[in-house]
Length: 157
Image (tube, rainbow, N blue to C red):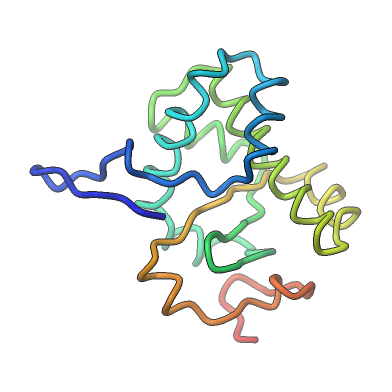
């Protein structure tokens, strides 16, 4: 994920890359109770907040997938709502973010032949997708989840 620093040192939301596939964003735009033109800025805003909390997610939750551009964590129900409250999202915005992140995990599951596993996980947990900075992904070791195995949050492959 690319993010620029402002003169005050805050992350610029406009430069934050959304680590979701284009068809996932289209699906979310079609199914969420949110104007499609609001979706991109909303997802960038959430990614900016998630980037600031990425270490917390890495230490606390199960990472079920990682590649060069993103990591996907399974979190307890309500995690997206708590994040939304922290960054001032409306209920419909929280719903759109939850849909987008869940749909991205389903899409990854389809590509990695883990769809059923991820669908079952999403019945009791929520997906949170966090993009990687270019520098961060260069230092990242491959995750077992990227090749189809489960990994505990801090386990070594």
